[in-house]
Length: 514
Image (cartoon, rainbow, N blue to C red; front, top):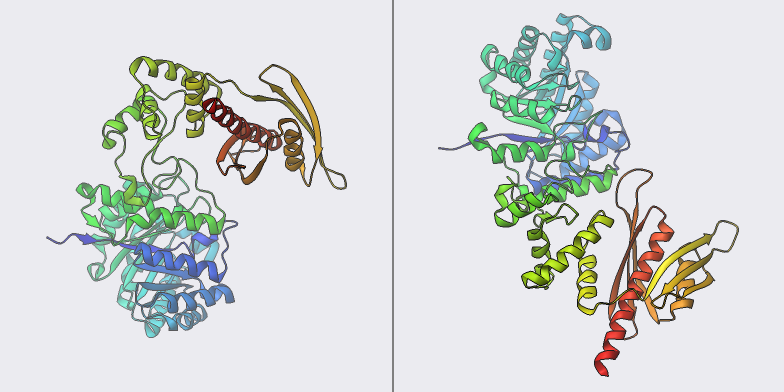
């Protein structure tokens, strides 16, 4: 038996672009369109042609770009000029669709359109007929259907179908509906509208109350066979139904919905990162499917379960959405199993009694750090094996900089003999000045080959984490990390950390020669 298909209508380039600050130029839209083709979407809503010359160009060029890989759709209001411009923009498309419609709720009719119900029906019919004169594939939207009188909605959809609509879109424009109500609305259409069986019923849900995905899935359960969504759920106000959420929900719960999509789910993460990078809209870490923490485990109980059998705490294989694998995050909450597993991945194995000492040292470190990295574990193990202390400890750093002025830094280090060593340096910037001052004290030849900084957390008080790599004279590379709310201090910590590792290795090499 063939499983029914749900069409995925992606409106990232139209409704998604309406997110504040998410405006995209034509080249960026083309790049996203290419990824949407790789993803396997059925319809790309490429823009609103009459809204601007840029949108017109985007719709036209995307039509050329994608060929017959998918339908290319242009939005219009139920206004003749809108429809004519959309048709013109879609001339380049091999599979064009005009998406036209009008408000259906009493709220929209009274306050936005200022027309009667009868006039709305007349405009809807005329718009579909005009659009159908240009293209064979016409989608009709009944805006704000989620707040409409169901009986009036039935009349409008029936008229649109008779006028030639091939797809009818039932939007919860304001995110007002909840799953039971929205599912009942779609079921009511399926039962009460003549000709509904001859068209595709589409759902377009917004996330104002956090129920866009749930409402869209309720629509599918009631008979809808197209979902309108965006990558990462971006869109007007609180956003749209997230493509990645509905696609994976339908895939994982075929026992409930009994349908499939044409989406290549392994392209989901790539699409998410592309859209986030182009729009500048950061995906929240705990976002379903594509968030940084979606497959990360911090709890010791969860880590133990996942390491024994992934399905104990993951219902989706990370590789199915283009993620390399699960992430075990080592913190003070991590258990012995997770620590031993990570150490073994790094090449370290210990007998039980030896591991007890390592685990105790790990807990002490984890109490002082938000997250323990591989480099921290390597340093921890190295300290245990060689019982080495820091060669140099950063006691304090002070910087003076600005424009005009010469960036100047004063650094105090404490060596292994507890001597306090102070020196100063100046440079092209505050970090350069700090590193020059440290070099005057440590006097170890090295080249700084990589410097990166990132925010550990969100917010104005976030810690900055600096990662650097230095190359010694013999070509070996050493990594250093440092974190602090002051980026300059974090940079100094990272540099001292890298130099300590270098010095420890040098000292060990000398000892071995002797």
